[in-house]
Length: 320
Image 1: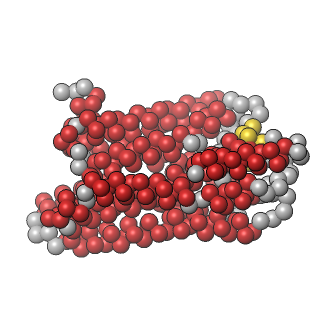
Image 2: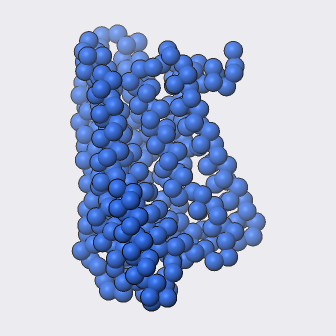
Image 3: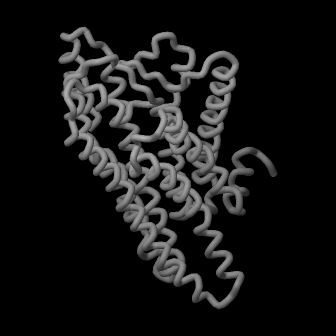
């Protein structure tokens, strides 16, 4: 799939070179002076802590045999996904702070467009299978290990990656072959569909609709699956006679629900609400929230009230 997109984007780059257009200007954040330096240091710190936090969870899960359970193995895969997700945009975003030209090539822009949206789709599906895992653990505890086998777990993870990376290539390839003119300036922090389509020589309402539809579907389908799953979980938890058992069940699901709320809350505001009255800086901050802040908070959320994960992390960090 990467080869297909790369070849198509290369064709686009070659096609547009005849009109002396070599790339886009990705404005990013337009702060200056001390504000620029402070914001750069803040984002750099968050990025490094995101890599360290998610990397620590991966090491903790695979080093501590006591937590080699489906829930934690899925969590480790999710942490790896988060590292990939932030790394598609943040390094270029940080480099742009001190770049005089802020130029991103056509191929680089469309590859970032493809991987950012594809990894976002994978994250939506991952959150759904993590909810399914919690449903089995709480609603079908006696059959949990029979159903959630190693084979099923691998199949779910692999299918998440495959479906996520097959969700967006067709519209991205079509957009990459449109003719672009105008100032070539993308007033955003990453290559997104709306600011790119604004730069086309002729309006492409059909492509805007297709991108909006696909973005909405990849959010809505897993979201309603998660809502349905946790509705069944809630019914099962309320039937537990002991208060301690209910608290333990809620604690098991609480971290995942917080992550779902953060990711879906910010993503739905951006991709499922009108953008016409939204200022560019507001759009950038909102995009920054679910591209950087959510992956940064995930390791904290999953380890904050989880004793097993805390013990595993202490083991990785060398604390006795």
